[in-house]
Image: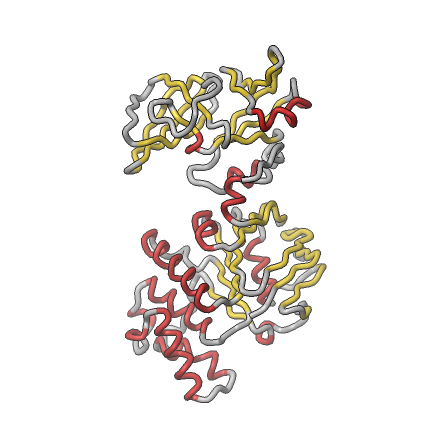
Length: 373
């Protein structure tokens, strides 16, 4: 087990395309850290640089305190699990898991012990004689993980390992990987575009965009205290709602004017937003921070905005209600399933004053008031 450190790391391809910019990140020993972001954000390139499959253009990568920029992949003592499983089709499960150990010259007794232990941990002991084509997708993924486990590496690298599985299996394998990490306590770097995986698995989550780390923190901190609008909009399903408007002062009190109505600025934001009177800001609110008033989960203080119902999506115990303001801003409210709505209805929507955010304008506008949880 080991720590992994990125120090001012850049990655620039020969074409001039810069995919990683000044990456500074320390992954602690035994930590499970998840790199998440949209396609092309640089998360897989970051993982491949740790593995030695991509060269670092500038900066240093250290594993267990040792600079590994020029260390060949086979000598870095890491194990990587790919999206495609990469199993040898002509080999049995046992042979796939044992292959790397045989290449390193381990004795057959030691190989047997390692393979049988890993198979037991992963619940695939009964599959050791089967070939990959005889396995389900979930079983193949367990074999790929088992092949990594038997090496007892300093660090596990996972590159979107669950993306080929169906939804039910992804949920099962997420729980399995979490349990496995708690048992093995091996430093793990996990890449995914799936925000649910990121929130479920990571001790910390690193949100990336355009080769730059936007925020690194535990999942709940990122969810409740996003540092900017991009992070706020990326994590969460449905995503955070955003409304553009102006800060106004009326009779000594601050309001957010969306154009179709006024919302009170909460006391905790007044000091910061006082300097932005007459300026545009973006209000952010997650779907669960909205209510129609009939099943309120918070105190209905302050005014509400009138909105028209455009779509109702039942989700068992909840409803995703799609609404539009008079200014035609589109939002989603997540309400209790008992709430009754008809398409075209006009309803008053209240915002939880403890859970709204105010951002600077623009896709990456910073959160103007990051409140402690």
